[in-house]
Length: 467
Image (cartoon, rainbow, N blue to C red):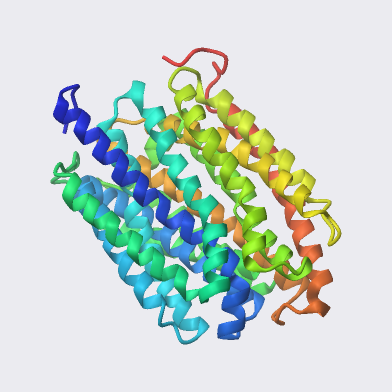
């Protein structure tokens, strides 16, 4: 569907931006709120540190596996259909999680919730890109990303308050309400549909191979350095090679590998996103445990400290997105990556005596970097492909984010397994937790340096004004 400058076109733009921004709020709010609630979940469901890690990782793994397939299904059958289905499923699983009776049931429901998130994020950016032309797209994405960061910023505060006042299950009651509102907005406000690849076939075999490869890789990564971890990791890598060969021969691949090879901007922007999320995503997990266990703070106070990062993200994202409509996004995103690395480097030196205000400053520096990186990088990706590939590109953006987040959590879980093991987090385990955290921040800082080079490599003309 083509969007013009008529009143109906403007109305559609407003509606799509409202709906996509509301949906963009959901999963980041969930992620940051759950991070704050992990100690409460562990106490209620008698879970150890590794099981708590899987509460986060199971959601990310399911999202990553299904993002590309749902992006492609949206291109074929209609992006709004998949988007709406994802919001409805997200709402239902939020309601069911309220009744989780042990850690296993919670993790299973988090897997289903991850699938619903894939349906939402595999199509939302594609819908936004379908409606907004190139000159307005960066600004729209900046607003969309601001909603994401609004979810991140309110998650620790609201999630911390709800956990302390009503228990961790109350977080999912709130999410179910927001999900219902989002579904109502989609039905009421968006009448259009987008399916530029209608009539093309869906690559079921490729999707299955992709899921097996990703599952093996991430599960193996989480089990390192044990022999079992290396076995699964190797199996995942081998299956990934099989997937690439298979997709090169498929008539309508779920992931067009040739699109990556032909498109320098898409390739390096995707790589930069993967590295950036791999370097940052476990920070909230670590800092939540640090503030509540090592510093002895309650969930609400910890949330107030952690809010500095997403607030900085939210303030910078619209400006960065709008700037990326006029300037080469590589410059903006690369500077953001550098600031993120600076914040991570400072976190390498934290101790139990580090003042809370200094932790907030470090997280704020990371937030500024994240705000400068995210919307310009997404704008670069979505503006580099034809309309018929928008679903795939949207899936790539989400997949790089999810794989990066899983790698980050995989590193965190590996370090916790090495320094703490399967014991519950108690005072005897605190020195091990601190060592795991500081080692993790060293690894994440090194990743940020690699990310700067990946971001700069996307376009040789970094100083030029964007065409």
